Every structure is written in C-alpha cells, then in structure tokens.
Image (cartoon, rainbow, N blue to C red):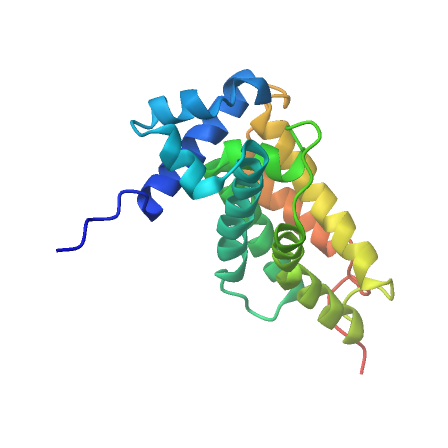
Length: 204
C-alpha cells in the first residue's frame, strides 16, 4: 500500500499562514525555517520540500495572498452599474485585507526587504485588478465616467481604497472614526466623483 502524503496542501497553507504571522509580529528576521517548522509541528525537511529556500517561501506567501485576493475580487457579483460595482469591489478589497492581514503586508508593502516576486507571481498580482479595469474601461467608453484614460481612474480608485484599508490595518485612523459605517459611503463618493454627469446618465 502506498505511503500517505504528509507534505500536502493543508500543511502548505498552515505553514504559509504561520509564516505570515511571524513576519507580521516580529519582522522578516523572525522567519526562520526551523522555527516555522517547529511552530507548525513538522520538520524542516517538509518546509524545504514544499517551498525550497526562504526566498521561495516569501514568494509563495506573496502568491497565496494574491490568489486569495483575486478569488474574492473575481467572485463579486457585479450589476453593470459602474458606481455600484466599484463599491462592491472596494468592499471585497477590504474584506480580503481583513481576512488575511499578514499576507496583505507582504503583497502591498513589501515588508520583506530585498524581496522581488518572480514573473509568475507578478502576473498573478496584475490579473487580480482586471475586474476593476474592466468596469472603468467600459464606463469611460460608454460615457458614464469622465473621458480620462482608464488606467488613471483605476490607479486613483485603487490608491483611495488601499489608503483607507492600510490606515485601518495599522491602527492609524482616529479612534472616533467608525470604518464599518463610513467605508461604503466613502467608496460611493469616490466612485461618483468620476461620473461624467451628476445624475450618472448619458445624454442621448
């Protein structure tokens, strides 16, 4: 009878989650493969078998973060209304960050000095923003949004959401600021600011 696999997907995800916790809590120097293996109740051999070197492990963290993020973005139910769809994507962005805050830091803040994702990981990261780009490109083409290059609007919307979420995750928002009740309002106001016409309609 074949021996059961011990270095499976469940262990891989367990190691990635723990690695993210170590970096978030104590910085990248805390990411020792030996400590990671001990914390996860496995061997360093298992870590090397699943990831290879420490840089490969960080690349896997980056990739896993964008895999989860991309799944949430792609899984949003869109309506065809540009403003509503940007609000929906912005909400999915925040939900993903709150669900995986340790991975978020590796994805967007390059919290590991010297780390550069490989080509496949960079391509995956770019793909996660495709839903945002499609909404904006269509809205500009249809005259719903201002006649501005779609990448300009996409980056501005991304920066707006990223700024709010990053301030929330780092605890840098004022104590009296209730993110839950005001986040959607802020998203909606930002999206509406790109409308070509105040009512959002397109003249016939």
